[in-house]
Image (cartoon, rainbow, N blue to C red; front, side):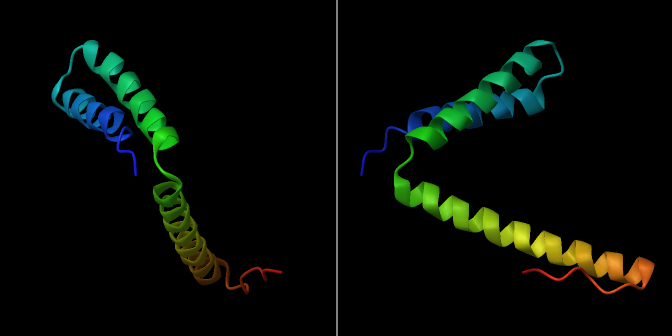
Amino acid sequence: MALFFLIPLCTALATGYLFKKSTDEIAYLAGVFAAISLIFSLVLAPWQIQFGLLIIVFLITNKLLQENDSKETQVTGKAPRETK
């Protein structure tokens, strides 16, 4: 498995750290560079890692939707929407 995707990922983490610690205008530039590097590292990642991240996103999204439905039920007193 090629690990070339780790180079932009480490760059994104380093610039993200700089973004959090800096208050100057360079922080905005570092934040943009961090976001671009993160996206680029995800594109370069092997399909196993991309698939794993996709499963994690689906699970988290499903959990958040269920929490939102339960809050809606408590506030309005209506039954949650049915999924098909």
